[in-house]
Image (cartoon, rainbow, N blue to C red; front, side, top):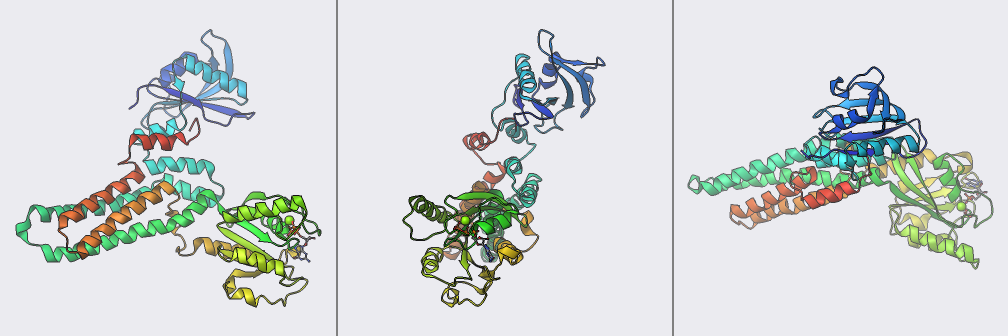
Length: 459
Ligand SMILES: Nc1nc2c(ncn2[C@@H]2O[C@H](COP(=O)(O)OP(=O)(O)OP(=O)(O)O)[C@@H](O)[C@H]2O)c(=O)[nH]1
Ligand SMILES: [Mg+2]
């Protein structure tokens, strides 16, 4: 348990209905007691757990600062597992700030970024993966992202990691027993047993690593860039997916000059959708810069939506762009099919799967369903439906899993090479430790500081 008592504003700064000052630590109740005047003369120290008291916050000179509701949550049944008092002030910058200052003057110190969550971790209320999910929860961009974060906060990932660690430990114990009692000569039987168990564990680690691609999408959004020659309907597509008229659409080629980026939710999947300037050879300076920018954002795309115009058929510009697009995961969108449908894209089909060619008529809102379905399929590909509750979303977790994987593979190699079992014990111990980094059982203090410093103040 940490000794001092911390405080911070836990709501966004600005005009609002209420603002909350959160205080956590051994002295939380006595500190707020000094500056709180209940209208019914009630004491915080006597308040029932989780109850709300109505009254005023007064400064140390006795002047009223704000009319408030104060809640008392005693440890260990609070967010930090310490005594927590939350002061619900009237919103607005001044009242909340003054209240916080008064709490400081009464004996609390300013909380560092993420310090409440860090205390929850240090006090064993949350493991590291759970604490990290608090950040994801705050930043969730769609309902599904939120679900994934909530699952992690509930400990679904931690439970799986702990299961694998328990299996590693069991295997380790088995091997060490063999080392300690060589006279039992269980060598041959146990080698095949060890191998089977190791492969089993490897499979579980792999499944988690595989989920990381999808997990990253839910955390950060799928970077999706719309490219194509001028006037094919790129901005129309952005607007259609966004369901609002965000980008300017005209029949003049070269309308979009800058890169426009918006977050859209496609069936719960967050997309960072980027509309770009149409690519063509041009002498216009502004347009030239736009085209250059298009090529830059294109480089970072996870998915490219390559649009062609059915009414013009495939032109030299399209072929040039297609050469750029080919190396990327892409979908070909054939737009303006209300004007013409029978265009020949056979020279592209060599490179593109049939289900990756989607015909649309954005003028009539046709084909969007198919496009959305295909994007959803791509994101979930390789994942059984419903498995989304166990997604690795965090790059730190993925790295730890990969480290563990290498160690587990080391065991298989040692088996293959008929090395003595004590070599395997080292690898198993390493895998065990790597997985422990995810839940925080085997992490260094530096790493803990680094992780929580990325949080916002008040969380
Ligand atoms: N007939 C028809 N017209 C369309 C369709 N989609 C878009 N358009 C029209 O095509 C023109 C160009 O659309 P934009 O969305 O501005 O095209 P863009 O690719 O963003 O063009 P630039 O920004 O100039 O590169 C507009 O007049 C749209 O109304 C479609 O499916 N059918
Ligand atoms: Mg445009």
